[in-house]
Image (tube, rainbow, N blue to C red; front, side, top):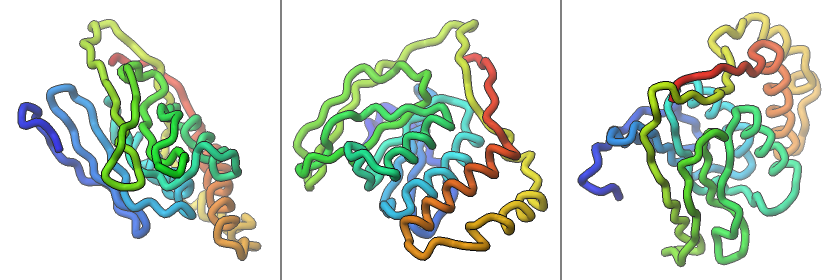
Length: 209
């Protein structure tokens, strides 16, 4: 639900069979809100990698990604380490650091660019299900004309598809794929990350806010 005082515009988002999302822009503050839904835990990191690559390439403004990621971030595991690694590779920050369900786990996240300083407070209250309601107090501000921030990005549009195909068919993902589903998802992630770093390494630039 959004106040009728705000002008809201929806955006189309890339579609995945195991993943749904809604993207809206509140024009009054030029922010984009992306709301992931029905994210399968087995595919979380692989889908997130593909999705963020598309999403960060499309948007140059500030944005908020929030929703249920179906990943227990409070439990140290390969999956959570990979998740945090993906966020770091896109220069993003996850702000929720408390239980968001009655079972005591962190499942609902709020993600922004690491340079974003609009998040003032985060709290949780009783919700309508086994998930709590996460309330974020966001303080918007007007940036000066000369205000700049450092942004990390990749030239994904420069990827040589033929070379990418040649590289991937030689990788163990193709020659010796894992039989276990979770291990296969991890293999997808590590393979794509390696090839992505080879053809579209992270770059940095200073941009005006």
